[in-house]
Length: 120
Length: 111
Image (cartoon, rainbow over all chains, first blue to last red; front, side):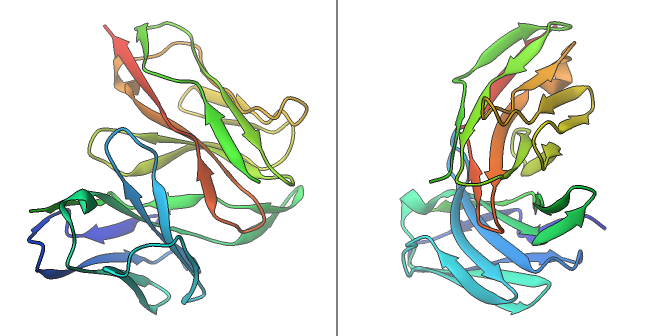
């Protein structure tokens, strides 16, 4: 199983709503990521969890609140969002570093299909 | 610091044409390098990777060679198909740090 599953696929929410995005992987990866992607732009890193602890927060506004309940799950809680927060939100996971035939190297990230969020 | 620079798009080719998308990187050490592909409305899929200098990553007819001397990882395909139309992202990762993505190159392949 090499899948990262995100739910929901689409979400429309008002500026006063509270909603959550969910992400799940069963590959035993210990690093999980949230990215935000606007149209025609590369993914922008928001948060990184390493071994279920928040290790990177890219100065994301507090209206986005990540949570990692266990090693397979990652949530992104949304509250009081703005229309400019409308974007594709991508979850990803990866192993750390792996030993191969040439020593230690960094591994790839596996991405989910994303949640298309619209804030109205 | 770490960064990735990709050629500007869009790139428009006829079916069966040769494809090159340039990617160069700046890194403080010896990163792993990746090409991801994104089809409309979808997430990113790993296309190929190379973890050491002189490694060649390949998949589905696409190839890229990790060139340490020129800090490059150019993507090539000998004969593109309409189904290859997508956005391609070059990326690097170093020392279990975050991934650094290029700006993306949109490829349009016409029949």
